[in-house]
Length: 393
Image 1 (tube, rainbow, N blue to C red):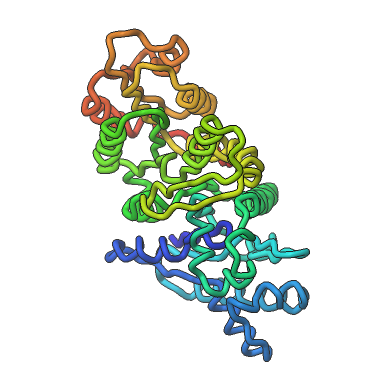
Image 2: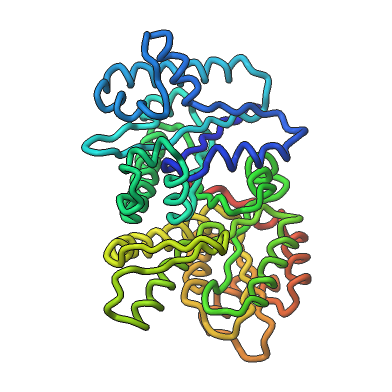
């Protein structure tokens, strides 16, 4: 049976680069990848229009009816190819929404999705500082910002993310109302290992989705090595979703630290945690405005990952109570996800953590040994994968 997966998200979040590199690991899988922009260019040529990365936004805003016609024909051709194909998986990639200047350009409409009928929608996301650097190193996009770094505001980038997610949520809600069921919408950080993406696309039945919950801030390096080691062990059996694969919080934390040290500071120096070399100086006011949105997006993103997962594995290698972890356990409890808790300390955990961690009295779900917990999850997988998807997003 064919499955159509829509891969989308805000512009310049590394969607195609990440996906195409990851899919090189899928050597024996039956799939086809469709880059919608390639079809837009092809249809445009036939209509006497040259569409390029440089002119596509201006053209779409200036000639909306013609662009809508080109986009609709592009989706029709993709669907025709899918219908004729014998491949099992069909991955269609396009941005969700461009907002530029006084106008906006839709990557797809409700009618496009009704034609495509995707079973899953995956929103590919990167941290905003990496998006900003991607713009700086992209000649055509940097020109759009006047070749001036100061014009690339973090507030703009978080709104790009907000617009893309809201566009997807609105259209999927309409699809579901019309009886076209999208199994889930997933906010996927591109810092996940490539194999996790491959497992997500092709091996979800054998390796069901599991959310890894852990206290994320204020720990020594050894702690994060332990978390990473646990992630790798768990990934042998499950498709593990890691909230750390999309991490903007370090920008907020660095801002807080520098403002606390010097309340009058106006330029905040941020070192990118992914490369550890480049340092950006950002406007304080821009970070403050972006932070208000980032804080909410962080919570919504983590809850989305919990909601689409079949189980939550809590790796609480810290004695202090984490409000984030407790909240994620509560969300899993609300959506009937299985909860497994690793807590290796003699001191009793928070009563709330203990309540959620011992949610099923007929089975042991709180452990002091991480390997024992993984083994229990593997043995009980059929129990907690039997629930129906919640369609929450």
